[in-house]
Length: 483
Image (cartoon, rainbow, N blue to C red):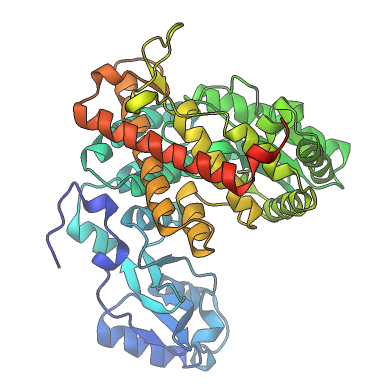
């Protein structure tokens, strides 16, 4: 095994440390024969495999419980009779931090590793992790999972900022770093929901879902500058159930604020009745946004389009996405109208690549990375993806899929992808610097404090934004549409 430094540990892929072939068995062999395999190889668990795909797992703990509880003749049982079939798996190409999150979240000691085809690649254990690294973010995740009060979560939230400072110093690639933040944020919010349920007796009733929107929905947040969330529930909810939903909505928004996640200035939060609806009501509302795209409707749809269920009934996510896809397909002018709004957000580049800064106001002398670049990139790629039937995932994954569909050329993918990656990382670094100085994280940057190299890279990134804007103009023939 190559030497893995402490700095790089968190961002290596699973296959970097998962080399041992998995010890497997058929699900149809007897338990006694299976235990002989465990003894021979001195292992504490075994994966049952059919057609090279993992179908179940049995551990020594399972055998212990079986012997203690069963009244049947154990000698007649097969592996299939006792194995756990709801396997928690990870791909060999996933980052190690995902393995850490899965183990901590599910309180397990091993993960079944599969390849891109779903075939068994190996088994990873917590011992494998500890063998190569004793100091890892596993402990922060475990702190989140062990938290029993909102006050504890608030303190952990501050530690997460310290972890991000450390992670940025590792020079990890931007995508893996953003995935790390998404995993932390998801785990953090899900633990908060658990505390509301167990400690405060506040819960979301079955048949409802808590949605995260915008950048959190795309799993590509930098810092959690404010909340963007909503709730959807089944159409057959009784008034009492709707009241439960409203109570949960109020409490989760206030609880998130109490642990350090600010309220949304635009009030796009589940506690606002405008962002808490039944499935049928959401369908009617999205129909209105799509078919009557005024300024407010365009903004609302842009945020809601990236919806993702973080807690609750996941089937509602598919129903909403399917409805949005169907409705937009039926409206021929929806995509050009949305594109026309997106291309209005031009990057702040002047003649000869001069960086254009704001001339007055609180951000005088600075330029806005979000308004001047990230907005057009995320919304533009999201629009092209939606037109192609792609919903969900990060802007990076959408770009790759658009390239495979030959909508974006290889050169366009490289240019636009590099622009997005650079702007995301610059935004994160500037936000972390602001937090370190006890300031609010913002999207603005002063070109005068950048190095020559950073300014050149920023110009290149903004030119990449222009590449997408020109693409949208051409693709949707915007210059031929009456204003």
